[in-house]
Image 1 (tube, rainbow, N blue to C red):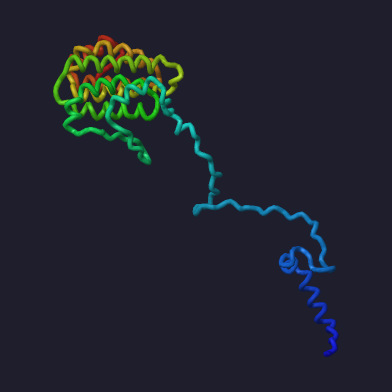
Image 2: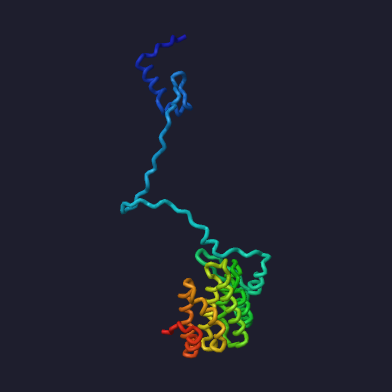
Length: 253
């Protein structure tokens, strides 16, 4: 047998230094024989320095997005009676990244043939507040206003009656703090005025009553004033006189 040679003192000291090092302790699971000692010192938490922009100012802390902006229009209960308005509209919603649009499920020829009937249905659905039926009725109304070609006084009167009902409900309904339904009715009347112009003059009177009331609401006054100018511009002097008689404070410029 080969006799074991004694380890020099300098080598033993070097080996002991390695075994007691932090790296060796980590590799050996925190212990190194009889020489290992338990580290009971508390480690200080790492300090995270804020990221600095190019111009030197600190970046503001990240803020979570509010879900309220996504909940402005609630989803429809499938058993809700309001579903009947949009079910009669042959279209569906295309959900985009920024906004929603509708796509008609029937041919252009059939859509033109049923334009007035569908326009009345869409007008009746303006008071709906839930998705997707509100989107279908409001977007559908805009499309159908551009599609109708011939004049139909009876159907036009029915459409304006539905718009007036939506205006009144939008102003009187306390839970609707944003006047969403009222503004939808304003937009619908504006599209109708752009399409038919002076043809609205004989049936414009009842629509001016809720508009006069809405002028007293600071959240609606600016939009109502803009719509009244649109009506006067499209309807001519007769419309301006009718508006002035019902709303004396209004001035058409």
